[in-house]
Length: 115
Image (cartoon, rainbow, N blue to C red; front, side, top):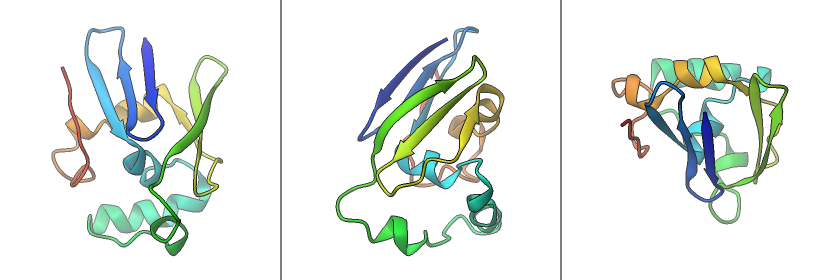
């Protein structure tokens, strides 16, 4: 597996099976697996046009990834410019939320690609 994080665009993962996934920074933030975003994810599942919390929507400048770190060999932790850094994105979870497989459910408005 190969990861390429563009802090202002998103995360591209080239999976070992030959496929690749792209996750925009905003999509990753919206889909954070942290407990504090569980309610937001439930709202987004019901209504993809859910308004993001003011903390995200009103920050100065675009939302970016400040940095990322591996957590063992099973996940990645991303620190976002809005201060959020509590979500651990396991490889399994990233496969589950791959925007290319969501059929528009969560990926609306996000740039996605799958090769």
